Image 1 (cartoon, rainbow, N blue to C red):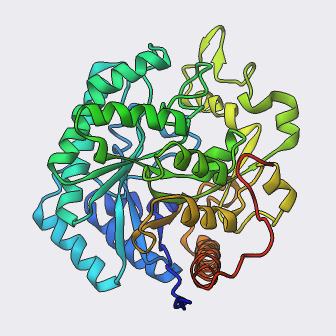
Image 2: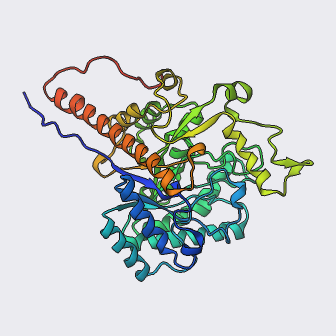
Image 3: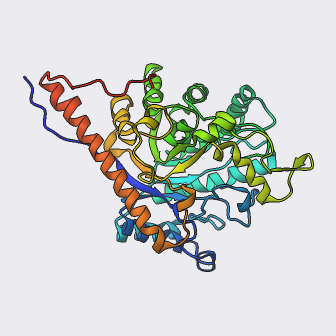
Length: 413
């Protein structure tokens, strides 16, 4: 009989810096852009985050989408209007050393398949700057979207992906980087009726895209930064998603996690279903998209009428909602990741992403205890899952002792 040591493996806990977009006021950080990163590293240590996912974005003065048209404006904590050179990198690395806060990766979430060639080039040029910055600060990954060309069908978008996105992955490969895709379908990205505006929204498309990448020699560059909130939005549960990937031989695709939930509103689903609000949203005026950016923000009713984002720990414990796939079962999420995916758990990042609208407080002192509580909850959930996995799948298994009960099963709800 083999006696296995109890040795739980914990994930690396961090937070996306978009959680507090204006931590450093614009009048300070615009002339001194790296001050925003320094301030966030200090704040991360204060709230209990061991790492940050550094949010990059086109500066508000350069973006093609006005902030008021977005449900959740992205943060340009990483300001790349000027080149991010070795001197800037040294300053950031010094701040990381002083605060003892690490870096999971850099992020830039935008539509990389935009149909307008000039707009797409602007986004690609910015992503290249993100790639170069990632190399200088010593991280091996960038997190972002793929997007969708709105003038093409989904099948045509696969061909477009091969044409325009694969070259970007080749640039990532040349720098030793992995591109981790977050799977949000981005239903409110446009005033059109498309729900799926990021083609990498589900395991089926992930596999199709990865096969294209393999043909072009960049299969190792494409990975998924899994966010369970988007699975809930489409009626899925994490365990079944992970089981499907394993069954198909793609359990290696997930390389990191966003910790963000979704709470389904049953009344909203009764009114509109999982396709969201299709008419009279307020984003159109006199038969065409409203010229008012704030009106265009109503396109997000394709999502917000049926669900609301959850900051981990802020939603009630609801076993029935878990079984109906209407809220994230965080404990089973972390267990399923260990049981079904090909992960190096101790080197996998668990990044809290804050998009709970009623707690999106742009006040450092008011937001501090909220983020502290959510990070602490996330850490303890992961620790509990790690201990359960180590005890059940390693210690008991080594001695031939069966695990009790059945637990949640894939494809059953």
